[in-house]
Amino acid sequence: MINNKKVFLIYIISFFLFLTLILFPNYNSKTKLFTFFVKEKIETPFIFVGKEVRDLLMVLNLNFDYMNTIKKLEGDNNYLRSINKYLLTLTSKYSEQNKIFHQATIAIPISIGVQVLGDRNLVYNKNFIINKGSKNGLVIGDYVIDGLNIVGRVVNINLNTSEVVTVKSINYGDEVFINGKSYIVSGTNNNYLSFLRQKESTEAPDFQSGDVAVVHLNNVILRLGIVSFENNQPILLTSDITNLENLRAVTND
Figure 1: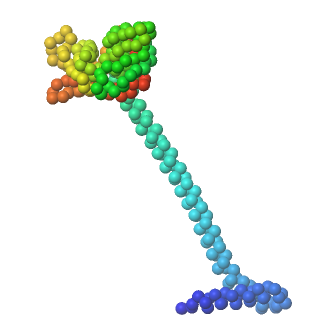
Figure 2: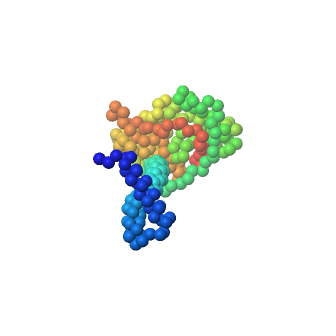
Figure 3: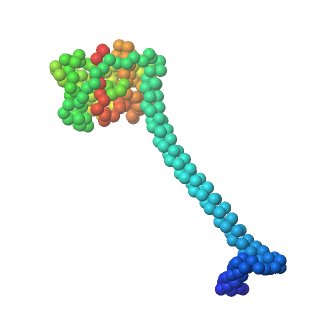
């Protein structure tokens, strides 16, 4: 096997021979032929290697562009996934509202924005104070809502403030409609209301888990909760009262 030093020496000798023939033009046709032969033998490997290296660099450059494109597409895909998740959340939220109103004409309640004053810990406190009162047109019995969900009702009123009892309180009671039938419900100091009876009837309640209980307020419909069952007894699950920043008091009853 030819070692690397011998190969290197052969290339050096060939190079200088080629250089000599180029620099000294006084040579005959045989010398020219020999020069051409040597030149071809020396140039060809370098030309071939140069072409292969150039092609390799082109491939690497294309791969780099492809990797950048893939990375960008992955980023776009993640962004679209987050948008899709957000839209699915909105769809779920509004599909529930649509279930409430699918057989009714939607009417927007006349309401005013209110702010909660003082202690906002509704885990232990079932009542809270708002910064609107009789001066703003509120009366006892007015509903306080978050979106279209009932949070509570005004039970005491002053000129500039009102006291609201939440739907979780044992002091809360209301008439609701489920599948067109009227029922009386009462708070339990928990996140659900209990059914007292079906209004004007002694028949057993006719509803299923997941049915929506609404309150009719003139031409407005508000949601109080969703029917569920606990120990084979019907209960009305209410929304968690955690966001007290966007409450409104309904004034058109």
